[in-house]
Image 1 (cartoon, rainbow, N blue to C red):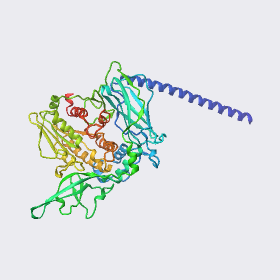
Image 2: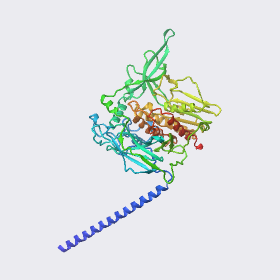
Image 3: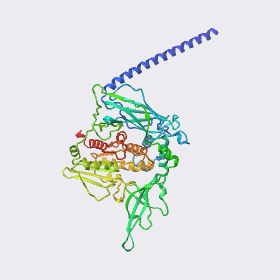
Image 4: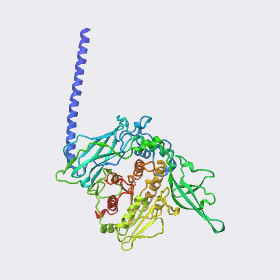
Length: 582
């Protein structure tokens, strides 16, 4: 009996050793296969004509997915989709993708002291595995370590950083993609797109704690930007009565319900777009007497603590100032982009780079247009621009730089339009008008403010028509649901236009960087930008992404960028309109 047991144990030990040997052999084979795959990938990488680093412009946060991302304040993803969204073909899956697009990591604890917030003075960055030299097309990685005001390591993410690689002497710069590791550390990925030298620069735009301030005020007091409505009408004895009242969007939450006082309001519902504008009721004039609109003012509802948290905004952080040396690769001194511009292209990160103040796009093959080539491109074109003052800069560029374009005097307020320039000889007509309310503008005729969706519905379209629009800076204080509905109405109009006139060129300009306060922060703009890109990613339009172009240039950021940036934006616009000239 004992021998039998001993034999059984010996057999089991032998069997166990055999299994371990097989496991060891299998692991060895996996290691060999792993290195063979790496070697193959290395060979394939050398064969690729286009760089593999061009990732799609995506969410900059890697630590969340659909299973743990919380609904951002302002978008209600958990409730049943309303009939409005269903009618526009927005499914639950599409909602989920939008949720991912606008999600932002939050502090995992209560902020009891301002000293807990990220300190730009103590936060640092290092270049990972810095080499003596690099080749054009390689990648460079940087680690940012956030610390608080007590010089303690942060253990959660949510800070808003922007990073760029630059070299002042050659007026070169490229945008860096920031990845939130959600533990107080951030990883920045750069492409090395030019031959020469470069340095890294990182800025803290807002701490995670300041972002929470921005989020909270978007929920509680969206009415902190308000507007005026001007009523005029006949009075007794042939006099003229006038009254000025407060106005804002109709949205009975997020603080916007505060306008309902007394016998409340005059409401101006646009039956086509479904938008409603609301003004306090004038005391002596009817609701039909609304004649003009203007910006009203700002209400600062920040607490003392909020102001302290917002104070550390747009600050450079210290780090490795090493000079990165970049050499040509196999005689190549630039990165070729061979794809022709066409609708539906995605925007990579980076989307391009500056060198000697000239932007080279990685989206598609573009060119730089002389005045003569601009006229050649616009010949026989009807160009309709609709949006804000950053798009009006494009209209003004064409009028100033193309002598044959003559602006007509339509006797309107220039800041909101509508504006018109024509070239009769070359059959060019160029239009710009402001989008509908809300609009921060000087006193202007209310009747001249048209919703973009209505304007698009009223255009026939066709191969000679170009429609360009943008939306963003005037919506930064409003709930994301409100902005999303506005965007989806425009999306519906664009889809109908492309169905009746598929040869129409439609171009969307994204949001500029430049503002850092509670009334127009870049963080707000980035969220709106992601909604815009989400809504039109599958529509078959051009998206001209200027976010990176304005964020990485050496000029001080301005919501209205200078001539160098505008000229480069125009070159991309014309490359979209006239790809055959490339």
